[in-house]
Length: 461
Image (cartoon, rainbow, N blue to C red; front, side, top):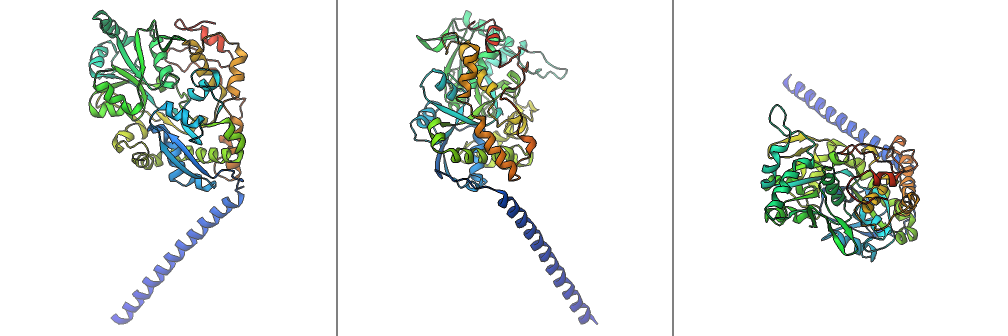
């Protein structure tokens, strides 16, 4: 009897295994069929240049490039991409212009300045916006100890955010009275960081300095001396006392917290909510010679942005970015801002789900209005030395920002079932006027002159 039962049990077990395997095979077949359906809708572009080399700086917001490569999105488009870290933003710009790089992660202001006549001039184009937000302003522990008494606190004694530069103003006065110039760092003259720290300071009545043909450091009439420091060197420069604070992207604000050498006091989400940050840039000639390649690259990057904005994917993204060939920072430092939080004073970690945005809110679309904001800041601070007409702003940006390339890429992704049609904005390239700035000033890209003239500090037209 036992033998019969044992055999019966064995047969039942075998049957269960067979059924389970059959179930798995069925699921595999269904998954394969789904992939085949998507593939059948995919229109493989005739790629003019499949072998590509792209550059980046070691910052969290280079993530779309790392993800497009590591998750196979470039290969899906028939592209074989090398992604190489660069030493500084000038090197990035020069190597793209000179053709050593086919494209690169770049400061939003770089292609704009190149087309508007500030710094090295070249015809560059932006078909893809890499992210929103992602920067912070950090000060040394000594400066924070002097600022903190000027910052309103909640019932638990925690600083109330956003922290305005009004809290820094008496500290700057103290340094001035003791004969010490107040020095802060930013990453490049046409970086978002430069314009953000200037905006933050000027909103509190602190003059960040003007640019002229004879003063390319932008320190005319400055109460705060701003200088260029490459992002990975920011914490060490702060620790050495060369600068007393800086504006930079992640992970270099959180690195100051982890090392115990400084305190982030605000983020660019509070300076300008959901502001554009980095862009992907190619030369106009590359796009003209390789139009399908440009579209394919944009497709892969849009998919990477979408993947990144799935919260469940962020831990994997942190692991990828921590690899030495990408950002190379510890996972804990990267996770502090990449997984929906941001740490200010040591132990004061706050929820900040939109600190890094790669896809939501049409983050990947290159809006003309975003580009025009950079032009207004170049004019405000003297990098564009002469008055320009309102029409000039719109005409200039339309040669640089290329939503037509983005739209072709996005429409193909919709047809392939990779993104929903609702994610393709119906727009003339201009966002509505907004007051989402730390000082509440209204920005309307269709009235750039009025916007420039609305500020008490800076050029007037």
